[in-house]
Image 1: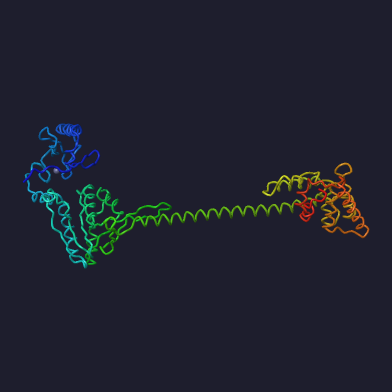
Image 2: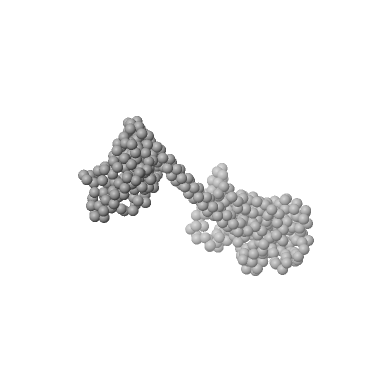
Amino acid sequence: MYQQTVEIAIDTETDQRIAASELLTLPEADFSAMRRLAMAERVARKNGANRARYICAICRIPLWLSRYNHDEGNRWFKHDEASTGCPWFEGNKLSPVQRRALIYRGQQEGAEHRRVKEFIASWLEKEPGVTKVDRELVTHGQILKGEWKRPDVQCVKDGKRIVFEIQLSYTFLSEVIKRDEFYRREGIFIIWVFSFFDLRRATVRDEAFFNQRNLFVLDATAFAETAKRSLLTFNGHFQNPVFNGNAIEDEWTTRPITLQEAQFPTSTYRPFFFDYDAARRALERERAQSERQAMQAKREAQETSVQRWRDEQRTSFRLGVREYLRTAIAYCDSDYSDELKQRLIDAAAELKDNHHWHRGLAPLSDEKFFGWHRVLPVLLSMKHGRVLGYRLDSAYQVLEAGVRQSTQRRVYGFAVVYLWASDIYKVPLNEKQRQWRKALARKVKLSVDGDEATYRRATYYDEAIVLLFPELEEKLSSGFAA
Ligand SMILES: [Zn+2]
C-alpha cells in the first residue's frame, strides 16, 4: 500500500503536460505562484466560476497544489474533488493491482489496450519466423518501481528483436522518446501501434513526425486484413507526397502492411514501410526537371515568335520595297503627278515603320532623290532599259543626260553610278554609243586617278540606291571614286 498521487497534470492554458516530479525541482517562487493561482481558481470555482488551469491528465478533474510542510520536496498535485474512478486519486487507498484494475475499468482505453495487445501477440505466435512472443502484463506497481521498460508485446523475428508499444491517449511524448532511446541503445526495433488514426490526437501527430510519416494502425480494417491473410497485418497510414498543380502536397494514404513488408533500419531502429523522404525527393527532382523543360519550351516559343516576327518584317519590307519601286515607275510615267508623288511618299512611310528601316534610307521620301530628273528616274531608266521620267527617246539618252547632272559646280557626283548601272543592267547601246561610253569611262578613270573632284561620287544616296538596286551594291562598296 502506498499513497498514490497525480503523476501528470495538464496545464489547460498551454496544453503542456507537467510531471509531478517537475514540481520538486521548481524554484520556490515559481511553485508558490502556481499554487496561488490554483488556489485562487479553486476559490473562484466554489463561487460558481468554471476555471481550472491545472487538471488531472487521466480524469481531467481540476487540481490544486499542496505541500505537507515548508520543506522543499513535498509538493503534490491534488484532485479538487473526489475522483474514485481515477487511479491517481489520493482518496483511494489502492494496491498497484487495484490501480491497474481501476485504469482498465475506468478508462475505455484499458480494455482497448489489452485487446490490441492480445491481437498482436496471438497473431505473432502464428507468424512464420517469429519466436519468443512475450505479452506479459506490466503492472503499475512494476512501472512505479522503475520497470517501465517492459513493452506491451515483444518477439524475435528472423533474428531481429522487435517490441510493440500500444499508443493510447496517455502515452506522453517524453515517454515515447525515452523508450525510443532505450530500445535504440539496446539494438531492438520498436513499433508504436495505434488503435485508430486521428490526426487531432497529439500522439498521432508526434509519431507521424518521428517515424517518417508512417503509422502502424490496428483498426477494423487491419483486423479484417489480418483474418483474410492469416498474418498480422497493419493498416499502414502514411503521407504520400503528390503533385497538386506545381505544388507538392502530402496526402494521407493507407495500405495493408505485414511485418515482411516493413523495413528495419538499424540507424533508428524504427521500422517503416514507406520511404517518405525518398518519395519527396523524387517528386522534387521531377518538378525541377519539368520546370527546366517548361522554361526551355518557353524560351523556344519566345525564340520562335521572335523569328516569326523577323520573318514577317523581312517579308513585309521586301514587299514594301517592291511597292515603292512600282509606285516610283508609275510616278515617272505619270510625268510626276502630285497624286503619285504622295503615294510614293506614303510607300516610303510604310517602310519607315519596319524593323529594317534605318536613317540611311531617308532619301526614299526626299524629292531631291526621287523627283524630276533626279537620281531615281535615271537609275530606273537604266534598269528597265527604257525612258522613265524624261521626255527623251531612249535609255541611252537618259544616261547621256544623267552623266551631265551636276551636284556642285562642275562636279558630276552620280556619273559613275549611272555608268555602272548602264553596264550592269545592259542598257541597249549601238556601236557609236558604246564608243562614247568607253571614252567617258576612260576620262572618268583618269580624272579619279588624278585625284580630281569632277567625278567624285556623291555617296549620300548609296544606302537608298543599294536597297532599290541591289545589283549595284558590289560596285558602290568598291570604294572607287568615293
Ligand atoms: Zn485524476
